[in-house]
Image 1 (cartoon, one colour):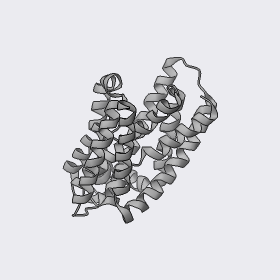
Image 2 (cartoon, helix red, strand yellow):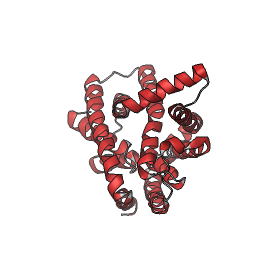
Image 3 (tube, one colour):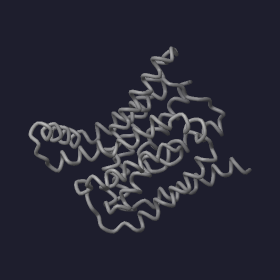
Length: 266
């Protein structure tokens, strides 16, 4: 991969990883328009690591408080709102782990194509619009409870289908369950930490076992660019939804889905 390609794809991955607009749908566009080939395992390691570092850095205070409360709850048996939130995040991660290990091959073989990505981009965009319009109660993330956490976790597992968007699916489910926009986004971002960590570990393992030569330039540049893009994305996304809701992202998803349909039918 040349430097320009690394920068563009890392920007796309970093910006779309935490927005409810599907990174898969965006990464397929350069392949269609510019005939770019598969990015390779070095690049996968880079963007997963960059995205993980961004969300950990942005929510470092919350994650530290949650970790200390969680370890304290194990030692003492007493639960605080931070320790409960930690347990709910762990519970919400389990469905994605199960589906990831059992259906990864099927998804990669049968669902990673432009037709599926176009359909899920549009369908889940409409679901996000409906959930945002119907949202009324405004719970915060400390009021989720284990049942809601499990449902949001199932939504995260569904997001393994290309084009769905992990943040889009989890925010949609959280809004449907009564969380406020900001709380839904924060819970989704916190949920991304164990998932991103697992993804970074798995692709690193694949890279080491593959015997491929490691492209250290692509690795380093990809980490830096995706980290900066993801950090900026998280910061401004939380500001945008507090003022404008999810409508801009719904419109964007529908337009992107229409473009992808154009590649299919035209």
